[in-house]
Amino acid sequence: MVEYLVNSCGFSPSEAAKFSKPLAHLRSTEKPDAVLNFMRSQGFDGAGIRKLISLNPNYLCVNVEKKLAPKFQFLRDLGLSESDIVDAILKNHGILHVNVQRSIVPKLEMWESLLGSRELVLNHLKKKGWFFSSSVEKTLHPNLKFLRDECGIPEERVSVVLRSHPQLISRKPESLRALVARADELGMPRQSRMFVRTLDALFMVSKERFEAKVELMRSFGWSESEFSSVVRKVPTFLCVSLDMMRRKMEFFINLVGYTPSFIASQPSILLYSLQKRVIPRFRVTEMLKLKGLWTGKYKFTSILVFTDTKFMEKFVLPHKENVPELLDILRVAGTWKGNDTLHLASEDEEGLS
Image 1 (cartoon, rainbow, N blue to C red):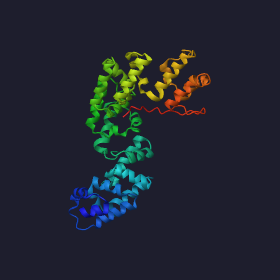
Image 2: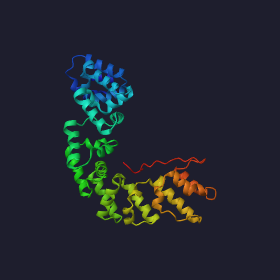
Image 3: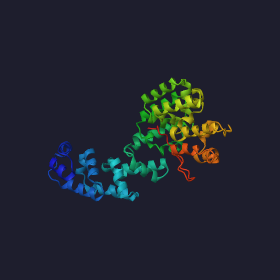
Image 4: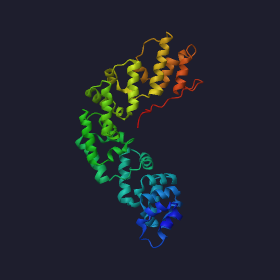
C-alpha cells in the first residue's frame, strides 16, 4: 500500500507510510483503483485526491457504485457544476460517508429554510469547511429553540445574521449559551434587534481579544459603561483589530480634536476605513478651510456619513478648478481615478480579521 500510494496518488514515501496504516487489511488494489478512477472522472486532480485521502484514507475502500456515485449525482441534481462539487466535497468531505436521505437532505432543507434560498446554502457549502458537519438534532435544532424560546428572538431575526455568518448556530449548544451570557453582561437587551448581531460579533472575538480591546479603550479614557454602550450600538466595533483601533483613536483625538467620550457617543465613526475615507475627507476639509472656502455647514461626523458620490458633489467637484489639490488628495486615497469618473472605495474595514 505504501508503494501504491506513492505511485498512484503521488504521496511522498513518508506520507504514504502514514496513510497506508488504515489500509493494511486490503489484499488487492481493486477498490482503491475504482475510487481513484471515479474521482478523476469527476474532476478531482492529484492534489484534491491526496487531500481527501489524507483526511480519511478509508475513502479508498468505499464502494463507488453504492456510496460515491449516488452522492455525486445528488449534488449534480442540486445544480452544482463539476468544479462546484469538487469544492464542496473538499470543504465538507464528510458528505462522502453519510447517508443522503438521513443526513444530507435534512441539513439541506433546514439550512434552506433558515437562509431563505438554496443558492445561499450551496454557496456556503462550497466555501465553508464546517457547514454540513453540525447535527440537526443535537446542534441546530437545540440552538434555534434556545434563541427562540429562552431568549425570545424571532427566527427571522436570527436568519438575517445567519445569511452571512451561519456558523453562529453551528457551535455546540453550551458554547452558544456562553455567548448569550457574555452579551447579557454587556447589558444588551435580548429584545433588541442588535442582540443577535452582538452574539455574532462575540462569536468572532475570543475572550482574550475582547479583554485586550477593553484595556486598549480604557487606556484612551473610556469607562466600562462607555465601552459596553459602544458594543450595544455597533457590535462590529469588537471585530476591528487592536492596531487599527489604536490608529483610529489617535487620529480622531490628536488630529480631529475629539474627546474620547465624544467618540464613544458617536461610535460608528470607528467603523469607517481610515485610509480610504476618514483621512482623505479630513484633508479635504482642512484644505477648504486653508483656502477660505469652508462654510462650516457640516460637522465632520456628518461628512463621514455621506456616500462617496455625495461627498464629491458637495466638497470636491465645485472647487476642482480652483483647488486641484483636492483631487490629488483623493487620488492618493484611491477614491478618484480622474476623467470625472468616480471610483467607489470599499467600505470594508481594513483592520477586520
